[in-house]
Image 1 (cartoon, rainbow, N blue to C red):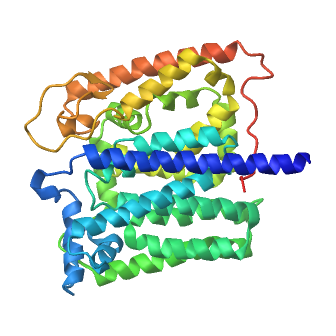
Image 2 (image 1 turned 180 degrees about the horizontal axis):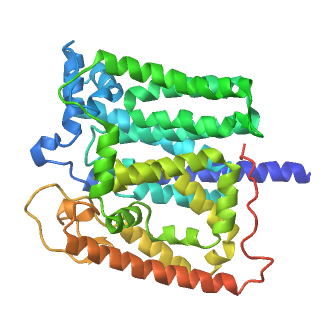
Image 3 (image 1 turned 90 degrees about the vertical axis):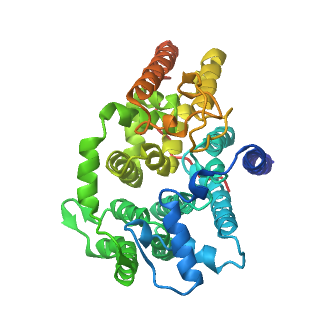
Length: 436
């Protein structure tokens, strides 16, 4: 009888979780459709977006693909947009990325179930991801021709498959991961980090000795991805040479560390500082899941050396960020029992994620706005919202404000935790069984 009641409760919670997440996603899309103007500057064909449109046009007219590396290698979404029977390419991109966003949410739910037991906490975490102004759900209504939506989808599914393989080690997960990597490389080269995560998960080296069988298994997805990517590069002509190593060195030299830290806050929010508390058990969680360590380290590196859009690179790490933050709150539930602290964290996150303002157009007819963690206006200057592009005075002010808010949150949380008996504080992480 108890087992039956427990199964019924699990089913009801699962149903409620899907309902809450679905409603959050749908409501966010409806609000954005009604309130978020599309980028009008240069007809919306700016940055890499212009290259994606050109690739799609070349596919439609059966022309050879030529362009600037590395964006020209990302042909997957453009090919699909050209193949759809829709005259307006912008609509094709929109529908493709809308589907990518929806599927990403589905697999985020499935992935988080491996690490976070509370369905309410999972729903809240995914909700905050959905409403972030730079996350794919909202950004889609600002720029539709983008490869980030599909890239985050492939990364999320890849993490899910790697975690399933870690627990089961069956052929199905390996085959699906190989297919995912082979297809995902057509979308964006960042998908090649999945085979790296898989290698560290398989751990082919045991006690200083190489296990030949596990090494072969570990390398299969990497070989699949490398072959596909090499084929793409050989079949596409570029108009300018590109060296990732050279570009990474240039950005490592050019990007100031304070701006990098600000970019992390803009992407993740002030809640990020809570990971500084209870770091011992967070580290233990990472040790148990080497794929998470590999993913986190690569994202940290790319966000610093990958280009000027620090925030976008951090958001690629969304799956791991949600796992770490969610696991932290689940281990330290007493924090959520303090209404004042919880309200402060939620309010500051909403402000940081620009939940109350739409994304301003990249134009020049702007008005001055109050700056608190962000420009608190829907008509602010677009570049002022970013850590690297904002003037030094603006970025310095935002960093000081984030530091002040983070200090208050950290001190308040620490005060709450030190009042708890040592045996109840900072518990060891518990492996969560996924909800069926």
